[in-house]
Length: 203
Length: 229
Image 1 (spheres, rainbow over the protein chains, first blue to last red):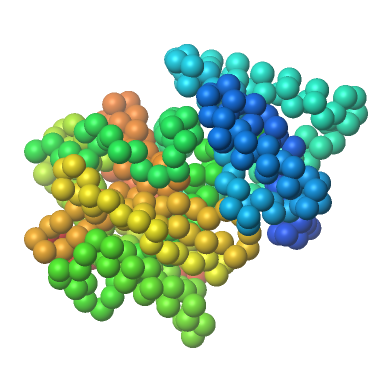
Image 2 (image 1 turned 90 degrees about the horizontal axis):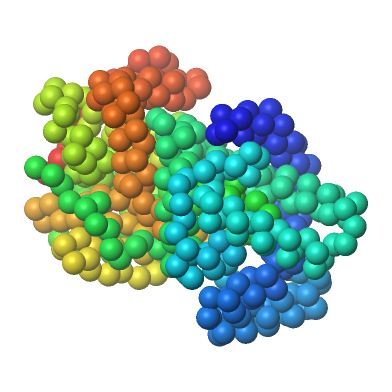
């Protein structure tokens, strides 16, 4: 499945994203990122509530209101410049906070690295977002496509670099995914404080 | 965020690799008794100077950034950490080759990022002592092009009177942990010799375009002071 996704990416998504990146100015790309992040902010707020973080939820709500109005429907992340910090939450993380184990590492078709827990979380998040903001399938496909292409365009260099810098690309992606999810669940973007034997030299 | 979090979360952390070239530099002489924070700060300043120097060609910049990365890591320690238990499965000869190839691999990774430099700035935002005597210096890479700052932590260990980098943690993702998982996979499947061969092939392929064949490898393969203390 990993090879399948990589093929789809190499022959379909990456070329489209490259063309997109050439045509669409950086500022516009950033605004599209902001727009979608704003659309999902209520979902982030809800997940913060479900995780028992009322303060974070309040901040998310304020962010949504500020960016939807002063930020021109979310095109500009004005809230961040006001010091309203962005949060990164999804239902997969909520399940983790509730104590649901991740289960084995999975690679989902088209979606990439996941786990049973995150696959369920993704499903729940998708249902919630799609029905809140778009009612007709015709109105979901267009924006979703733009979002997928635009998001891929943000990481063109990074993915190329990861491929160049790894000796086992599959293992590199799996490990990056696992570390990233652990950090997200713990709401940190920096080094973990407990590192087991990671830094012990075995003599 | 939501619709393609799995696709995006992995490379998002690695996006920070782009900024990595910023963080290491080789001042003419690495000063003894520099604090970990000073090590990171002085190297950051020096690299930014290299990147901003319009009189240097891309290749010259790349070489300098490579030298910087090469001098600021303790590659013996990083090699032992990424191989973990497998380190002892290597013969002394294989260990030497591994350290050499891995060092080359990492240096080239940093060097490649020179081309992607986009006026990013780096600043130290904090530091902390680790229970085992290591030191973590926390930095932030600010991207004028847009997008959120990237958080990059450096873990340093003291060798003699010099602090050397033994890990880079980008947005919570440790490079040592990531390489360890890759190398574990290869070694358990194909053995240590195959891993060294893969690194050699990778390094050979990574020759920059326009570089006369051979010269770069010889230069990189040459032992340098400061890598092992």
